[in-house]
Structure formats: structure tokens, C-alpha cells
Amino acid sequence: FLVFFHQKSHSRDLLADMLWPESTPDKGRNSLRVALYSLRQQLSIENVENNEVLICSSDTVQINSIYFTVDTWQIDDLLTHAKHSTNARQRLNYLEQIVQRNYGLFLQQYDDNWVMAERYYWQTLYLNTLHQLVNAFLELQQFTIAAAYAQMAVKADPYVEQAHVDVMRAQVAMGRPV
Image 1: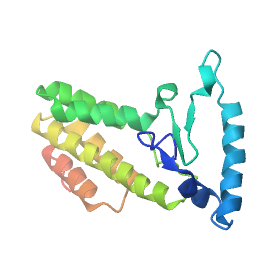
Image 2: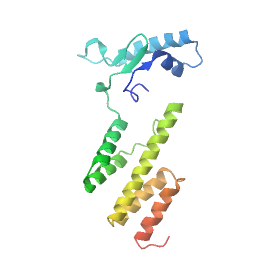
Image 3: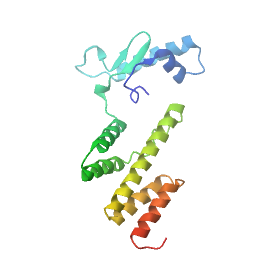
Image 4: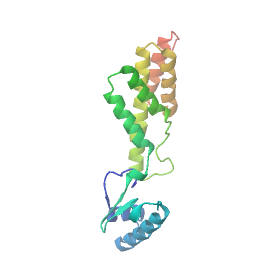
């Protein structure tokens, strides 16, 4: 949570409630204090003064993102480059890099509410990126590549109608009956 939402500091009360929802506020804050101490020890980095990996105040906690890299940050950067690219081939390259990350389901082993919301966002982004690639390669008359991206979308989520429509469009473009 701290790494993913690194842009801002988070209330200790919020974190304690997220991690220990059954505890009283005092017990939750105490558990958070112990966990942060342990985390500081585990994340200590040589030659980093005052262990700046975690930035803590009496009320808030924040992770110092200069010590981390997260695949979703890289995907966001690629998406930004794709959106602002004026060169069609370069835009395709960025979109293909997003898909090649093969990031799967976001934090698949967790089911917290914030994780589920982010999982939906990243799955939707992945499917939209595949759809954009299908459209682009159909336009370039590279039907086999378009069909491959359409199949990837169906495999990622077989219940998305647009993915099946894209497969059919690619099949028709290749002269294959649907």
C-alpha cells in the first residue's frame, strides 16, 4: 500500500485500521508502531542517513519512492509516452511494451478493497491497450499480429465482448469465415 500510493503520506490511524481492523485504535496504533520499527530494520540501506526509506511523523507514514521501482510506475510512464507520441510507429512500440510486461492480475494473492479496485483498473488498462493494438494493426493490414493481440485479450478475460469482436474482425480481415 505504501509503495503503491507513494505520492502522499498516509494517516497512521488509517493504516492501523486497515491492518488491524478488529483492534481498538490504541492497540492498532501500537501494532503499527511495532510493525514500522520492524520494517525500518528490514529496509535499512547502507549509507542512507537516518534510514530515510520510511518517512514517519507522529501522525503519518510515507515511503520514500527513490528507493523503489514498481512495474505499474513503468507502465504508467509507457502509457504517458504513448498518449503523447506523435509518431504512430513509436506509439505502437510503447503500447506493445505495455502488453509485453505481462503483469497478470494485480496483487493476485490479496483481496483488500483497494487491491480489488486497482486490479480492475489495471486489467481494464491491459484490455484497452490490446484493443488499441488490434485496431492499429488492422489499419496497417498486419492481420496476423492483430489476431494475436485479439486472442491475448480473449485469454485475459473471456467474458469481454469487445475481445471476441476483435478476434472476429481480424479473422474477417484475413479472409477467414467467422
